[in-house]
Every structure is written in C-alpha cells, then in structure tokens.
Amino acid sequence: MPSSNKRTLLVINAGSSSVKFALFRMTDEHVLAKGMVERIGLSGTQIVCDDGTEEKTTRVLDVKNARDAVVTIVEHLVEAQKSRIKRKNGLAAICHRVVHGGEALHAPVIIDTNVKKIIHENAFLAPLHNPPNLMGIEACEALFPTIPQVAVFDTAFHATLPEQSYLYGLPYDLYRDHGIRRYGFHGTSHHYVAKKAATHLQQPLSELKLITCHLGNGSSITAIQNGQSVDTSMGFTPLEGTIMGTRCGSIDPAIVLHLMNHHQLKSHQIDHLLNQESGIKGLSGNPSGDMRDALSAMSAGSARAAAAIQVYAYQIRKFIGAYVAVMNGIDAIVFTAGIGENAPEIREMVCNQGNGLTHLGIVLDAQKNTQACDVPLEIQSRKSRVKLLVIPTDEALEIARQTQALLWPAMP
Image 1 (tube, rainbow, N blue to C red):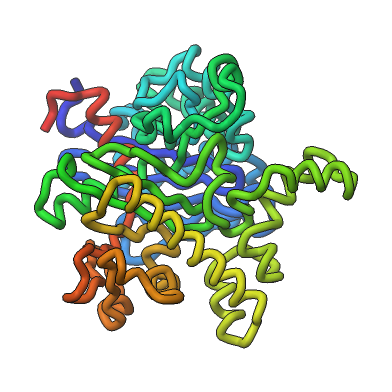
Image 2 (cartoon, one colour; image 1 turned 45 degrees about the horizontal axis):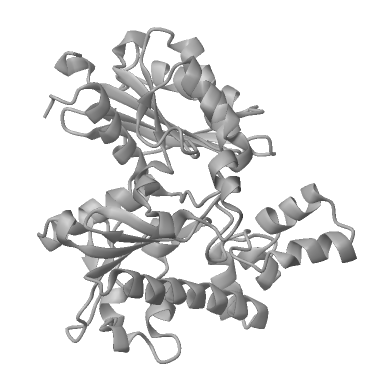
C-alpha cells in the first residue's frame, strides 16, 4: 500500500491524433498537472500543459506517434517545478484509457502480457484507438518498469447490457464464435456523470432511471436503470448510433454492399468514408466535423449545415424516446461532453424540435439553458416532470478513481 505522499496517479488517454494526460494527487483528488499533445503526425504538433500555474505552457514538437507523445509528456512532467514526478518513483501507478476490451476484459485490470495480447487482439474492433492505447502502455512500461500499469476500458460500464440489447439479428454463432455483438463505448463518461447526477439529485443511483447523452465529436446515448447500463447507442464499434462529427452512425447495411457493387469502392475506402467523411462533416459540406463550425455556418445561412444539425438533434431525440420506452419512464436526462456541455442550441433543438418532448414530461427552460456551468446545472422548466441536467464530464478522474479502487480498495 502506498504512503500518502505517493498516492499520485498519472492518467494517459492515447488516441490516434492526440494524447491527453492528467496527474492526480488522490488524497484529495487534486489535479497537479493536465494537458495534451495534439495534432500528432500533422503539422503544428504541440504540447499544451497546465502545471497548476495561472498560464498554460505550449511548445511545438516533432512527434510522430503516441509512443513519442508519451515520452514527451513524461519528460515535461519530470522537469516541471510543481510536478510530483520530478523523481520517477514519485508515482503510485499509471492508468490508461483503453477503448475496447471485447468480452474478455470488462473491468479495470493490472496490465500484464496477457492483457496486452487481448488489447491487441481487439484492435480490429477499434482500429483508431486500441493501437495507440497499446503504444502508450508500452511507452510507460519502458519509462517506469517497476510502477503498476492499469487499463480502464471504455466498454466496461456496458458489460451489464442484457442479451436482448447486445445481440444482433445475425446467426448466433457469429456472436458465440467471433464476438460480434453490441459493446458500447464512452463508458467511463456515462458512469461518471450518472454518479454525479445521483449525488446532485440526492437519490441513490440504484433507484434512478437516467438517459446520459455524451455528445462530442463522437456521440453516444445510454439508458441507465438502477445504476446499470441497459442499452446504448454505439455498438460493435463506435460507428453505430447517432451521426457524429465525421461518422455516419447507424445506416442500412445494404448501403455498404451498394457502394462496393455499384461504385467499386474497396473496404478501406468505405471504412474511411463512413468514419472520416460522413456525419456532420459529410452532410454540412464543411471541411471539418466540428459542431462549432457547423453552428457558425448555419448562422451564416448554410442550408446544408442547418440540415446536418437538425438530423443530429433528431436522432438524439429518437434515442431518448426509445430509452424512455425501454425503462418505462425516466427521472433525468444528462447532457455532457464538448457539445452536450457547451452547445445550448443543440440541447434546445433536442428538447424542442418539432412538437417538443412535453408528452414525455420533458420541458426545457430557455433561460436556464443558456447559462454556463462548471458544476451540475438544472435546465428544466418548473413544468417538467423530468430533470434536465448539464454535467461536465471528467473521464480522467473516473479512470483514476477506478484505478485506486482496484489497487487499494481499503483506502478512503
């Protein structure tokens, strides 16, 4: 068991184009440092870091992949005056966000050779995420060979999905023999905001029916009943569900066959089309899938941007209606992540588009909806029977908490 002055955890979230990090002193969950290396492999790669001072530091880098980024992050933290890892033995553990653990890994786990093998084997399910996740793990192992490494999985919270939710209408042996099923993603975020919602509402999570909307460049909606995920919009991969920044979301699978047979597209071309050129980007015609760009274009009169945003909000509404039916009622809806927290226009469209959601007891307060927040904020009208909450997510803190619970369960 680590002494109190070594209860310091480094959280690494390694992606294909960025690596985020946060350094926590877990005695009081204080953030000692946080930041990211962004635009990996592109021009303008840089590290942005907040070391607890009033100003962020930014430095341009020559970083080619997640491994290089992790090395750079560690070098920065070791050198930082206020960092707790000026000495490399100042860390209690390093915890990694890993997107896909398949059916084999659905809880936080200490990383060993077998765990890395399973992460590698599931890379085909999350090709943009698992490989850099593994690269970040191996970089940290080389830098800190004696410090425990822990993996926390995006899919873990959805391990409670019932069979009726996770099975597809395909031959059963494709699930039994090859693991083709719904897995769900953004689990750490959905779990974190669900617990925050329960605390805010002063009710046990085990007694609530919640719909959590993680809306960002990747978006997913989850039905949470009695503290457990019972349905979620993303599926076998993060491509399923609502349209997203550059992902198409759920489509008729025959479209893929049509593209292959009538447009002579190869599998890798279709993969790029569905994951990188669709969604808000594809519908709006903007060069990016960033919702801020789409909202600006809509304000400037772009009909295509307006249509893309309307489709986005409409699909979220459909999932909300479906999940109210699944759980036979609802206590609260939570909006979180970049769009969910910072785009009141989207929240307004989700709740009020068309005839609104008043038939479900969901009524938005327009004035409350425009307020900024860094703590849970209620945005429902007095007439609403359902609470509408905006809750900032903190996946890094949730990963650190799960790591602490795994390694030192007796600690307060």
